[in-house]
Image (cartoon, rainbow, N blue to C red; front, side, top):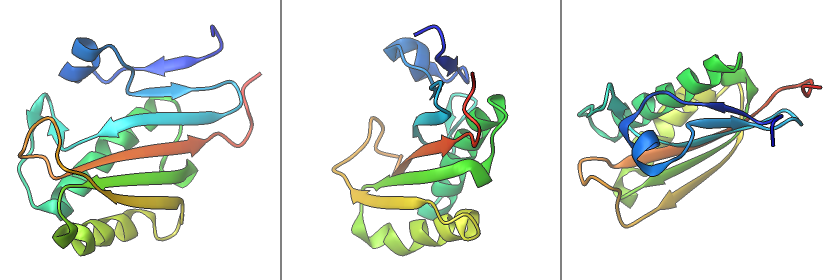
Amino acid sequence: MSDVRRVSTGAPWEEAFGYSRAVELPNGLVLVAGCTSVIDGVIAPGDPYEQTVNSFNVAFAALEQLGLGRDDVVRTRLYLTHARDVDDVGRAHKELFDAVRPAASMIIVSGFVDPRLVVEVEVEAYRGEARS
């Protein structure tokens, strides 16, 4: 497993729960853990659209540490707590990824670790040329 690269962003739950924000595999696949609208350890208030944008910005920051960006994203998963927010979350996704067109899933869940959070996103990216 020494060929696996791990990225931490210093978010409080990473240390408390023992996970990495992102993991890059030797084949070029990058998995970004669930990201929410938490900035500097504090939940950033906002409507579902704003929380979606904030959540993806957390994921993009992790990708940047690996030298990747939005254009390298091949899959997204969007988890939201209310079906009524589908259009707002979808609008944010389209604005961020319309030119990229990753495979995407949108899933309604019962809740998150803090009820102020209404959206969580996961991202998978691919480095075109796998590391050797």
